[in-house]
Length: 598
Image 1 (cartoon, rainbow, N blue to C red):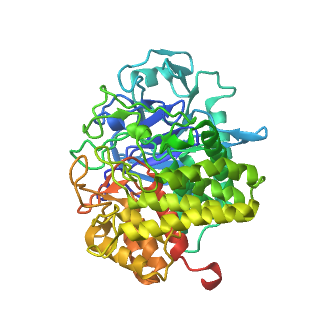
Image 2 (cartoon, helix red, strand yellow; image 1 turned 30 degrees about the vertical axis):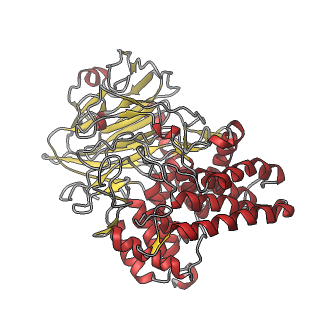
Image 3 (tube, one colour; image 1 turned 135 degrees about the horizontal axis):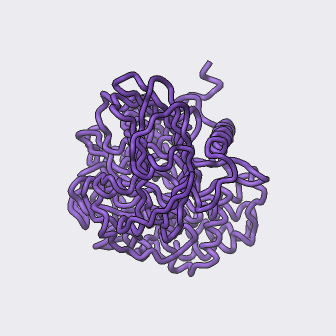
């Protein structure tokens, strides 16, 4: 797709990565965000959050540019930008983070490769390699040799090795491209071959890796390209080293203009991770599931069940103390920029359901090398006990209210899900425990039905005894709390649509929170609504709404967290795993069967 002649989505960014690092590239083919040595590290390219400053970016700029067209190479995480100048000169820029099998394991370094190739004419490019460190505070010391530039970043020194004239790169002078220049950014180590040879080999192997990975996905018949792009993006948001799944690559992209709803999403929310792993597993990407199971098991073993947190660090860190990065101006100058997330201190009872739902795959998926056993059930049971003990206690809820606590219906439903899944798991590995957990699940179910139903609303309300709609309750059918033929499910879905729909999208809620009334729609809520319509048998309507929602993606097929219901401009951290999961789950629910498509 061309970036010219198109209404801006606000976050028209592409993501490249390798499940260790991720980089965001804008419609000028500039790297504007990348953290090292992992997703939650120091953003060495940070202009995305510095008012689009010329500092903190990696530019490859064609002189006298007239147009740029960008797309991913088919079924890969490799971005191609074709740029033309007013004299007919044309270049292509290939961007990727290496990822492929080597010596019996995955080679996925902290690195980025940029290949610039002449296609026509006499193009001249200007390269600006301008990393920052300390969250924008400092320009790291720069030294250089015959074919490399070293950036002395304290957390992780980087080396840019290239066959381009090093003087032109250092001085940002324009240079002619006769054939091809390669830029290999990575650890401060000597490249073992020439940049062109290394770049070409890594490109071939990385392309082969992604195409093989995609070929093994069990995609639905309809909307395949959208599902494949969503699946690749989710894969890029998983941290292979530990199995953690991050909510997004960025911090502090605001949920709406002129708000302080700026949060750091570079961590693993157990709730979000469950949705991601569930989607990838349905597509057949079991590798991510296995790694996440190890991650969550480590957290369960290391944590006090009474204080299970909603969010953890990539290594399972339980303290994510929040601070301000005062040297970054913010997205479009809209600060503050936060590092860390105080949600780690919040009480969110739905986390017990999220943890058990995530691990439950281990007991039922026979593709896994090792199935869950009675010992694993016994590790999960203390979480179930906490779910049963706390399902009627106030918490911050799924939307992480910072200024109030109530008994949130979604949290109680997820506590029910914890006990319900333990009963189902026990059927497999310890039948004597089935009555125990079934009794507790039934008790929670009865209390939710008695306390959360609102005749005034005409459906289940956000809180016990409340009368306000909450889009999170669109999952009542998905998690099995209500069956599709239960009239209370249809009534609740209708009530949520009636109160929360704004144009083509749904708000999370429409009452003031800690920062006032929300201005933008949370995209995953609209996906949940579409799934609910499909569950209720309204397929044609669901398909129509799904097509409209797909049109909200940016030119690269990606979504952030939020959207302006009037303009369609994307807001919030990016790319948002919740939103990309929605694409997959709706497509799988609505697609024609392969057998019926011919």
